[in-house]
Length: 528
Image (cartoon, rainbow, N blue to C red; front, side, top):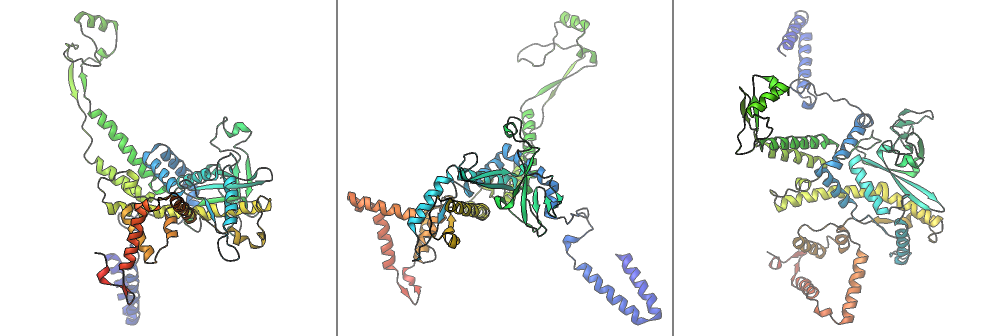
């Protein structure tokens, strides 16, 4: 930098001999340039210890093309063999799908009220179809669970729909490894292949190319059923649901949700295994025998005769209390490895802490280690994890559940399985639906029940929303309550339910004792 400044001043001095104005202008512009350089982003600095860190600005498709397959295989290996990742994937499936994301039709009549008769008919017909809608006879809810697992581990999964007058509408799930990734680059029809996905010049997927059987299948599997991993089939995009999280505009394939921690988790487990080996060695001790006669180690006849003459023998284990003889000039040396270092626990904790962050879960959930967690920190971690689960459930709704339900309803009405007058002219009206959510238990039931009760009384929440947040259905809950109360009154035991009486009395007392002045609650009635 000093050389640069000196050079600038020398040039300015030379210009000044001819024109002081030119010299001043030259220095002024160099001062502006110097300020611009100093105000640049530190992240773009190309000097110092990180000067070799120069990532390239490749597209998402290029990055996934290079490392996507190996990342997927490593993630699958961790899901099979690593207990932390195995538990992470199971929790993801349980909290995203649970017992199944079942549809709740929202069909309304001309009066604007829910048409319960038609809703019941559609729900019953859908439930009957959903029991065996898979091409292999699996249920819709088993398919949802399978899709959620592949989405989290592989980063993408494909749902293919087929229609038949005999079999009806069926669903097939194919994993990312079955996509024909040799379809890559410009195609003869003017489209572009992106590792099996055929894209139009406008960037719209128009078809998907799949192998008939998984390339990693054996002869005893699908290949033995007349299918071949060497044969590829092209399926139009309107029959394929490509389910993945698109994080960049240049991305047309998915990547493992925990790709950023695959290497770290593997290294942590490798360190654990190496430490276990060291601990096993440290728990024992051994003896090395030093001898100036290496030929003693070879079992010649002369050595055997000499050994027999002095009563010496070769011992791999030393029996306690025994008398053992060595060859002349042999000396025993003890050996005891050191115990693993004290940094092992903290290293493991930091490694798993970083892995839990990359996986979108809390450290306590990821490791089942709640020893150092407070109630508030554990609750905060649970809330953050549930935000990820809600996002994933909504993603499945948008990319899978909604389009599949609409296709089924179109097929059911068009095939005569359902009779809905005026359906084709008002399809969106009859296709309105929402899907259930897995049941989420309250972390602190007593506190959260009181909070929910206050929210209802303050008119900032509804009973319907509270029920649905817990994975229930309002109509089912109200119907059960109505049936239960009627049955209790019929048996004459209504007044003998102390819970209901106490609850009613508490609510009545609170409503009676709460007074409002000018829209604000009276301070004398506020709870401490």
